Amino acid sequence: MKISEVLAVPARAGFFADDQAAILGGAKRDGAAYLGAPVTPGFRSVRQAGEAVSVLLLLDDGQVAHGDCAAVQYSGVGGRDAVFDAKRAVEVIIDQVAPLLAGSELTDFRSMAAAIDGLVVDGHRLHTAIRYGVTQALLDAVARARGVTMAEVVRDEYQTGAEILPVPMFVQSGDDRYDNVDKMILKRADVLPHGLINNVDAKLGSDGQLLVTYLTWVRNRVLALRDSEDYAPVLHLDVYSTIGVAFDNDVERVADYLVSLGKVAVPFRLRVEHAIDGGSRDGQIAVSSALRAAIRARGSDVQIVVDEWCNTLEDIRLFVSAGAADVIHVKTPDLGGVNNTIEALLLVARGGLLAYCGGTCNETDRSAQVSANIAMACAASQVLAKPGMGVDEGMMIVGNEMTRVAALVAARSARMVRDL
Image (cartoon, rainbow, N blue to C red; front, side, top):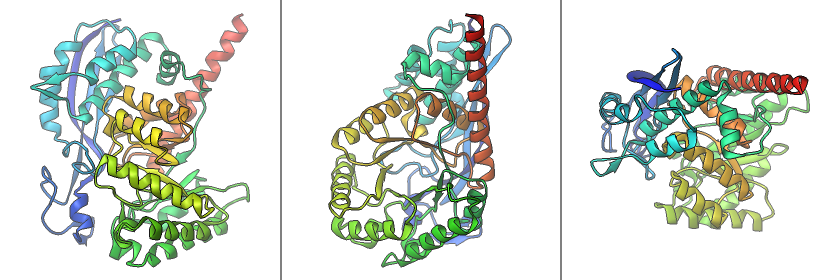
């Protein structure tokens, strides 16, 4: 089977692109918007509508394979590519990518994805979002050519050995940190609430007390609303380095604070993402390693999650080698081609750490579906319910995709057994 034509069309992402530096610097909320001027290059405003591009591969048998280019909510920081420009991306895809793919035979996903992910134009690799979307479409195309799910393509080409089953879903609250938690509990989310703790004064507190109060409420709310005692979600907070800011980046003080949070969370397990920003990849590895060691020295089981400065497959390899976290957030759009996401998830798991197949609220329904297939094929520790911050939509898209894929794979396996 061949690719006969490549189309690229601007699309909507599931949330916004936000200037994290401006928000951390005190940009004030005004309804759904932020006041003030942007700080990070490429932003037109502190908050702007998320952009995406749908890549459509028309196959010579009439089928259409589909992937979506998308970038993270907080672009342009932590070593990431600049904020995504959909109009410019369409031009690049049509001019540079389409001529390479049109007319080509669909062979194996792995080699085709590597070629796109490694493509250099005018001395630079393609924007991570472009590589992300095009390789999604290629994975879908290979799956269609073989008549199987994307998860099966990944499992077989990468020999993951995974049983293709749904994996735990992590659900994020956005700024609606209370009503959305109720939704998560009622729908039995596996990991919650994220919390979007991205400002010291408004959400953490200069001494951390605001977060203590919030975590106490989350813990008590789970106990009050859960339908049975066997529902025990992991509590996962993303704090965007605000704890480090509040405690002067002092690892020992931060460790003491995180241990105290762990006690508040009991009887539930606590994970904290990006507690301190190290300022660079090497700096992040050093500070995260020190923080993890300090927490263990205190006898606590609070888990450290790394995100910023851990953006590429090579970055992840170094974090895993250093044991610089308990959980590695494999932030799918940041890695470019989804072939890198697959390699990263497998690398983390084989290194004895927990592999979180994540991403961002600012993705699309399609990138979420593809991520779900990859998470299942790699037996990830958890997968992000995305896009958006509304809970319902992300849980529906990712959860339903995992359920459907698992059912298809199980039915195909059953038929094979009957035919033997």
